[in-house]
Amino acid sequence: MKRILFLLLLLTASPAWPDTPYPGLQVEVKREGSQYSFVASFDTPLPGCAAYRYLTDYEAAKELPGMVESLAFREAPDKVRVERTADERVLFFHVRLHSVMEYTEQPYERISFTQLSGDSKMFQGNWEIEPNAQGSRLKFRGLWEPDTLIPLFIIDHFARNGLIDRFSAIALLAEQRKDKPAESCEAAQLAMGGEQEAR
Image (cartoon, rainbow, N blue to C red; front, side, top):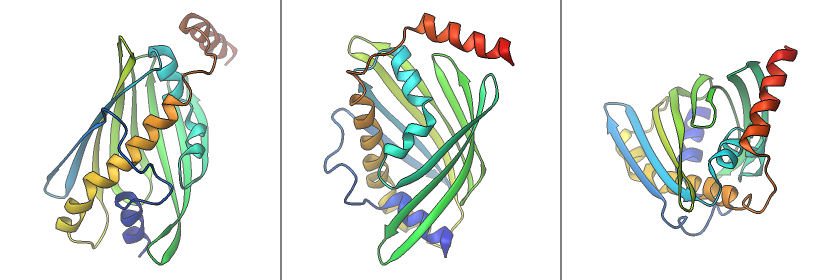
């Protein structure tokens, strides 16, 4: 039952999510067998370094609707384990969801992730950062295999709209950071190097 609720949470919109898609957001969903591939992209006013710092601020995910906790544990200079808990109402049910992800960082260009444990058979993907005249273009690619008894044709019907809501929220949160002061990439690189030497 929990896996079914997890899938409903992933695919159905909540009143806390944005009412309209983020301008310029592109989302594509395909299925091959029981595996889904997701591709999404949007422009953000954040320059490349700030966009990277946003994507790697794993604990800031708590600002997204439904997220209760997001804890990050650095395990190597380029690897971070992230434990997340979401607490939501889905239809007539209340459910708490937990997942553990491993992120591999490639400053300031790419962040890859894979699920270590959670409510899916498999979930992995990456974010890529492409600087442009507006700031940056953020591109997401993911591969997901659900662990559920819900027929796949029902998942097909809801998948795209649910993902549009979630990526719109991610894009809006990034836009809200545009006026926050950010360290230069050079300063961030120096700080990262100091942390590695200290270890």
